[in-house]
Length: 193
Image 1: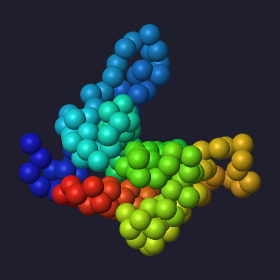
Image 2: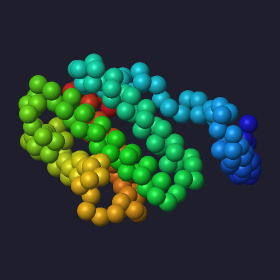
Image 3: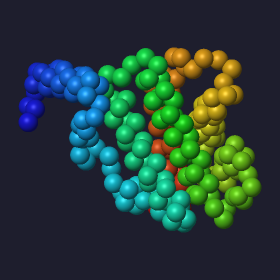
Image 4: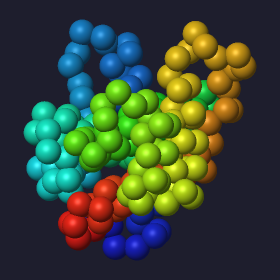
């Protein structure tokens, strides 16, 4: 059991070195099956997410969203618990933001089913959510920014290089927008945040 920062630093160094040795060995011996155990209890269970999404009536959507949140936990771990850097980190950031944008879209749609028609696109839906006092104009701005950023999923539409395009601050901003959306929808539907 790690008891202080000095022990943490020593454990990080040792694990990093051993992980590199494992990777090197497996590269040299591809027929060997060797997997490192992912930390237990870091990825929150699907049932926990479903219990936070009760404002969504569609059970399939609620389940699929819970699985998306589990993937979010994996991205969160990679971004905050590893030394991943460079282009690979940029692409994990991008995909985490894309995932959060998809979660926002699905929550907005599922949380307004029967209130705002299904034919409305994302930005029209957020506009109507403001009109109905479901979200604030400031949250609409953040959600629309997240949607525009999420649209980076379309690689063939990119006009510029994605290198160093995505920042950790953008990821944090995306997380805040989704959290505020969930709180707003729970409040609108009379559920405690």
